[in-house]
Amino acid sequence: MSRWKKTIVIPALAVALGTPPVLALDQEQIRREPTEGEILADGLIARPLALISTVIGAVAFVVTLPFTVPSKTTDRAAEKLVAKPARYAFKRPIGQLDSCETLPETCR
Image 1 (cartoon, helix red, strand yellow):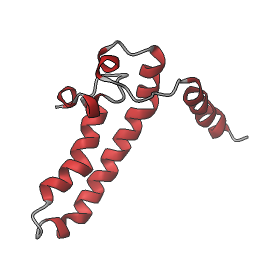
Image 2 (cartoon, helix red, strand yellow; image 1 turned 90 degrees about the vertical axis):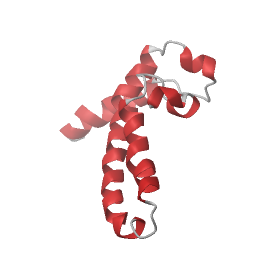
Image 3 (cartoon, helix red, strand yellow; image 1 turned 90 degrees about the horizontal axis):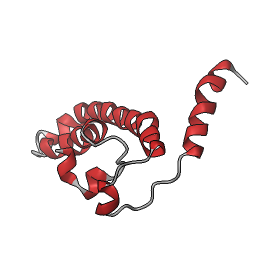
Image 4 (cartoon, helix red, strand yellow; image 1 turned 30 degrees about the vertical axis):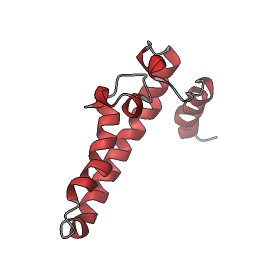
């Protein structure tokens, strides 16, 4: 097994497999303190993926500008492709993986 796999892939898989799945959460569960596993999964997996999604969304937004400007849908594209993933990555409370959907006021 290559050194890269030993240092990156195996620990990432261990974290992913060791973290309990986050099921559908109601508002009471969102307001509770997150567990250590939820914070760890958020910091190591969810936020980096949201950051990558924000960067890819920004590139897609620029590429689609020639189509969104004439149709006057630039604001909608910016919201869905860039702003929403950015809020999920940077505004959401740590460990609360579903709070932007169930409690949108936490991500404004």
